[in-house]
Image (cartoon, rainbow, N blue to C red):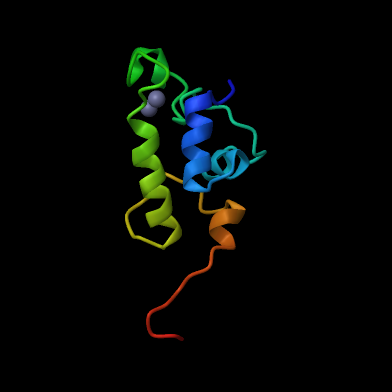
Length: 97
Ligand SMILES: [Zn+2]
Ligand SMILES: [Zn+2]
């Protein structure tokens, strides 16, 4: 399954590469194997979460969580902490230590 144009545009706008998005969603090869709408649930656009292919409500929510997660927000277990994006993330600490 390839990401559709809407999903690709949404990720691009957010500054996330397709490979990074795949890896964050436990697809270690960097090859997307979720749904075409950008949701890692492969049944998403097929009516499981929504029935069109361009009206995914999951992707914007997931992208929001992704940035929170990169910032180290607690309680987000959606993404793969072994992905290079997470391992190499730049953590900005307020105390400067
Ligand atoms: Zn979904
Ligand atoms: Zn979807």
